[in-house]
Length: 418
Image: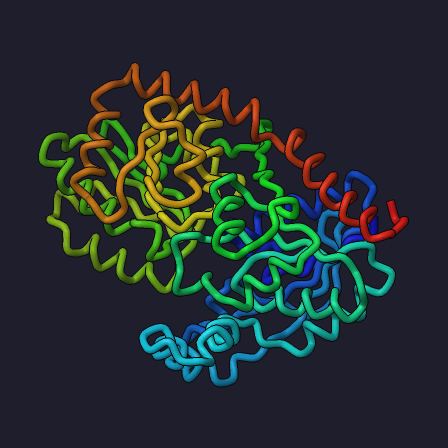
């Protein structure tokens, strides 16, 4: 097949959707398909609209990345601050232009992007685009309509983030797409119910990981100077919705009973990182010594970070999946996640992890303490999670399912590019 992937950002940009679509693109190319990626030259979604961001960008132009042809296009930040204000006002007042304002304020606003989609999709069998709420989905939808090319949307829909994702424009695109790939059954059911997407168009597939992914020899306990007996780890972008502040508060409660535990917060910095640093600075001197903030790390060191931990925690309620839970299970770690959102359907409570309510530090502290006090429970949960990931979430099992959706869409639309 000749596939055009219309994405917001692409490797070396970091993020869950970026990682997902890089893997899908490269693995589809290895299976003999011609894959072209169109993306902006940004490193982060925040580059589109946050003050002070967008100053460090990748070079626009064409390159080949691991067998995938990638075209990066520039975007505009003009009026970003005003659009942010208008979006906030719209969220509070429900103005008639609210859906349009939400879409445009997110960006990327780029005429060059739409022109590139039209150019690159000549002769394409299918256009696939991800994620919402970024405007690359709009450009892909317009191009598919104009050129009569089938469209697949991978929304990575955050069901709990209604201010951002609940938009009649997005719902329309999803309904008109030829197929929608969701990452969980939770997301699939939600889009059928809330967006009115026909059940036959929805395909809950999920993501995969490599069990033989390379791992650096880094000893993170030694590298970070960790002296405590056990380590609680958060790994992910420093986003507000990730619950990092709640985790720090939970550890304060937990340290009242167990002081021999370190907290490691590792991930790419965001605008929220300053709030995390302020919270750490507000801790007492002894507690501060137990917290290790790692602002970015090489991808090959991710497994080393996980291997240094005893318990993994990520209590975000807005995840469309939660890839990092699979990565934690690969290393035999028990996990703690949120009772709301897509990740709540990934974790089997008391079998391979625990679930807590978002924004309740004392409940989270109790869950952390329960696992730390019971090494045998931790071991069994970690083993159970590892088995589940190996049986259901490897790329060897997942990619053929993605490929089948693409092939079916092309066949149903009378294309013969397979």
